[in-house]
Length: 155
Image (cartoon, rainbow, N blue to C red; front, side, top):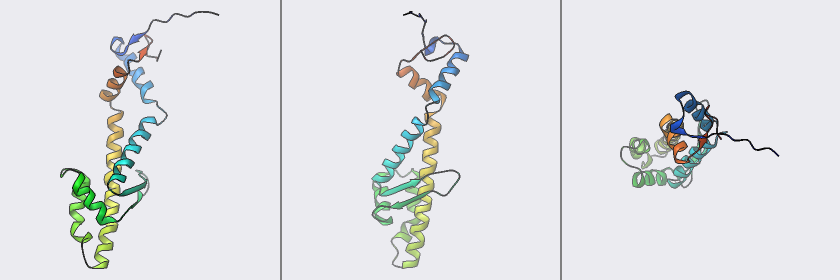
């Protein structure tokens, strides 16, 4: 058996180059932060009556209303603030969703679903951008009290 002694440093004790290596280590999470953000988006959507199947920048977003477009719209109006994009989306389609004209209502529902999925895709991308930001990464590293070698490798 052998014992190896390694001097470890807190994040704020590292050089700028070592801090950047530590950030790279933290960001290389095998998609954990992305999955966490996606799970939060799915949970929020379910609370307003939207079941999201896919959110992707490269292909069509897919989802469906759990109880119906009108119920989803009501939940958004009750639970999302007036400055939220989903609230603005509901406001654009509210009249059509309440329409007695079947064709107008179906068109409004389809557009509402499409635009709502786009709202959630944008929210997801913003959440990922935030989670991987230098400020957030530094805060997580400090908060978890990770220790590193002088070169910024996780100890």
